[in-house]
Amino acid sequence: MSNISKLLKWITFAMEAFFAIPVIGGTYILAQGWLPLGVAFLLHIAAIIFLLKDRRSIIGNGLGVITSIIGIIPILGWIMHAITAIVLLFEALAGSNNKPRY
Image (cartoon, rainbow, N blue to C red; front, top):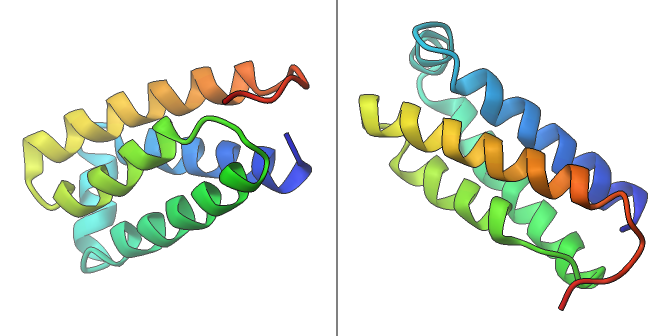
């Protein structure tokens, strides 16, 4: 996995994990007028592009795109951010090996 792919995977994980913190993540998103969900959406799309180029798994970031879209629904959004963060964490940790995934 390239350095950019790794960096985007870890950044999107950190962002999703922050959004999944009860009350704090939701308050931040609401205070910013849902702009963080748009930024997350764009970062997930960028990560998908780089991961496809590297032939790596895009499941976590694909889930992140869906989460960014439905994240405006309070409880469902919180659950989806938590699930997405966990998936991204496992993918980021698994990305340390250098074998491409097809």
